Image (cartoon, rainbow, N blue to C red):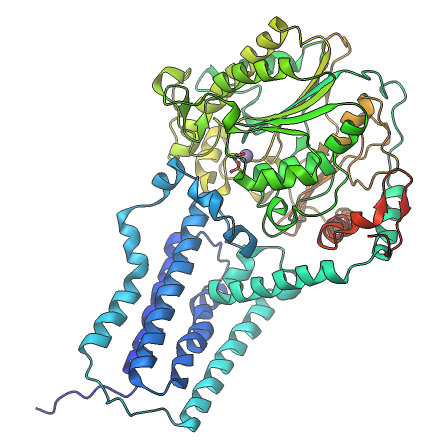
Length: 631
Ligand code: GP9
Ligand code: MN
């Protein structure tokens, strides 16, 4: 019998095939792409190939077989780490990693309980191609060290690789025109050009944005300024300055969505305290209010509140642009005699807060070191909300008045775990443990707020304060649509439903005001800054902000999401489709058209300000542009 002879480049071929097939399997098992047709499935299948041909193919430039194999093994390890990193990240954030987030290593270190929930032994399978390559290198007979690759073989190989790349891009372009120019959706990118190429693309975009700052100049602000001025909503004279001098307490409620309010779960009321506020005479409850965050989640919500600008479409602005010049709400309140602080029982570096708060001119950050945190009083991500508020009230009482203090809760955070004694209602009974537990942690947070109000009263801090509370972002991602549909009694969750599910509650509680009501104007987190500042009698007419005062008669029913979706009183625009809010059905795109353009424009202006660090050219006192020479 003639013995089998391994072809010359067996290791290279095995590596390409092993990583390709592994990646294709991972795509289908570890990510949830919605694939609409056979072509999309085909593109998803072939998209790792072009990159792998290049990456492994570089080995052909090495002179010795040993060096070539080393390159191949090293590449396979690196690519496995990248792919697995994406899988772990996806389990948590339902999104793909982008470069700035990758540098947030401190964040990953602290995911703590969440990491345990996310990783398991089977994950070694994500490295299977590395093992296959190692075995191949060990057992396939060597060619002899002097064998090097001929130039024309190499040339033919890379022509083939290029052809595969263009085939991939061409098919993607027919499926998804303008894919690379619009880029706001990472999932679409990965689906069409593959994880590996996507990362290269991301590197390119990131370096572009650091170049943007270097090249930006103040004149770019003129157009934005004109837009901001033209779209200002006149203040409501009755409300402006009505509560001047009061303390301001802002509570950012972790992962709280509106659907649990005024609702029960198998007969158990989920938010009894918040529900009692809805019809309270001292509370304005906004029932049609939406989060506008992106990948920066909690930190984006903070950013939006402080600046009335959007976070970024990639990465978290808290990380990527913490060195920028801003004109934050805390800076403004500070200038108006307020003592400004944030209270949050987590490490100061989480979300790069310590850095960003300096740029936001926040005077004090009460981080975890100001709290007594031990095994008894913590769960999940850290200090439980009830002891958090208890201890925070003590800190509040010590602060000079008037103060602006922003508190960020933690217990109602994925994976929504609680100690037995804190469970006030049972779990829900869907196929999603996440949703099932969510009701319990929300119920706990509601209880924490109730006791916080009591403590404020005891400390004599209640009457002279305004308390603003809102949900920071969604808690239940689209991964749990099936369970959500069951809870909401629907057949399925459509893109229309998903958009409306981004509604978060907003409460503005003003003790003694007496004229509280439910307001169903459509608004979003961008509107918080002007709304709050106006209540305190602080003018914002020169501010470079994109939101508008919710109490203004000119406030428009229009809220833009970070990804370009939007909601108005009549329409919902999602999945590139216009829906009629009266029926929930698809309607003629014409109705949405004018808003689509404006949404793009506002997002673009916001990005321009942040990427170019344009506020360094702006004098917020006078509304004048500073000449480039000044800064
Ligand atoms: C961390 C907390 C959570 O301190 O604010 O951030 P999130 O994961 O919700 O963005
Ligand atoms: Mn959050």
